[in-house]
Image (cartoon, rainbow, N blue to C red; front, side, top):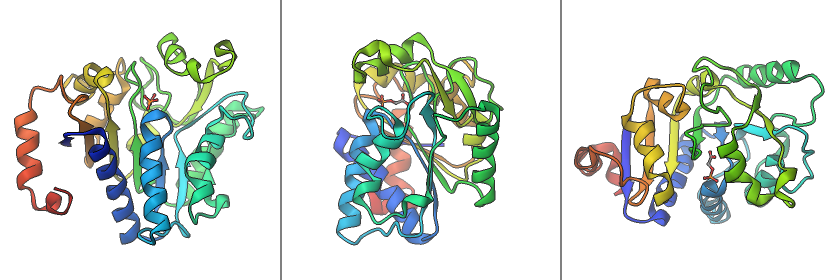
Length: 261
Ligand code: PGA
């Protein structure tokens, strides 16, 4: 794992977007795993800018989102399909037929999980999975005590997630209490993981995920099991880390980071 701490949120966001854009440039038929949430909005705004400036081409990119609320149709403004169209897909040269999310309206939940897993497998797996982290440590909607071997499935959300996300719903109680999510095992199968964590509110959970024990109580800690992970944080989110000096040393000295410094 490599941990990159940038002084501002904007710099952390921009570095994350550049990592994604550079990976797509190197492999135009890239399979990109995407995340939603407030943190990612700025990353998508940067990618839109880069696409409009001709710096990154999405025409052959295939995307898979981590999760979708159960019971929300794509046109619901709180669905993650809507979020993705609104924040990214409507503004870049991607073929929407190449953009995948679980179907929140699927009748057969088990079949939907299996369908999603097959779709990922059939296109050769995810090259890079973008991740945020929830206040309860979740990646995707893999809430505490989710199996670290889990695959895409329906999952009950925690009260903490409900508090974090129901502010976007009107009324707040209309937020679904369940979602489809890639499993931790699905996420760990991606070839590379880039996790972005910003803001002082995430400092405690960031330290647990990066430096704490690997535990299903913080599914974000499962990234420690993956051989190719970069975690990008702003200064505020990095406040609880103990090895900051080492992380900064690596970023300042490793040749692979020269172009991002
Ligand atoms: P946030 O969500 O970016 O809105 O904090 C992250 C998450 O829950 O994974």
